[in-house]
Amino acid sequence: MASDALRSNCLFLVSLDLVKGERAKRCVDAALRYLVVPGGLRSLAPLAVSVPLPVYANGGGLLNDPPNPYWSRYECDEDTRRKPAYHNGTAWDLDVSGVL
Image 1: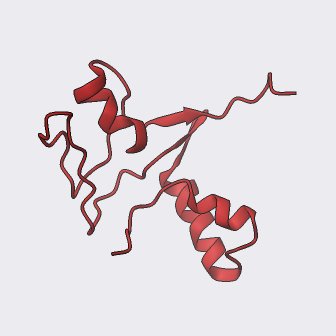
Image 2: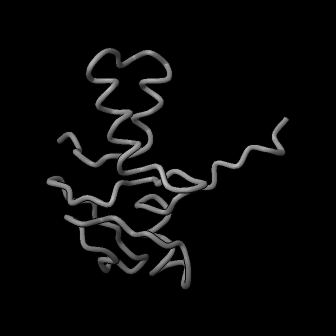
């Protein structure tokens, strides 16, 4: 089943010219509205999804609310707090000033 989660990965398709025209414009507009934050880019938009995105603990227990998987902060305990945030909302710093 296709996911309706808005992720920053959609921008790769636009940048590689695999998505064009109106669809590319909608993708970029959605990213600007929901994913771009000062100094970073979220890994998942803070929106509900129709295809649940569960995150399970090592013991099998559910760590998040699958229809509302966005998790804004990467902090605290690795297994129960940071794991859901890593791919589900934390904004990653886009500072590339030291790259060149």
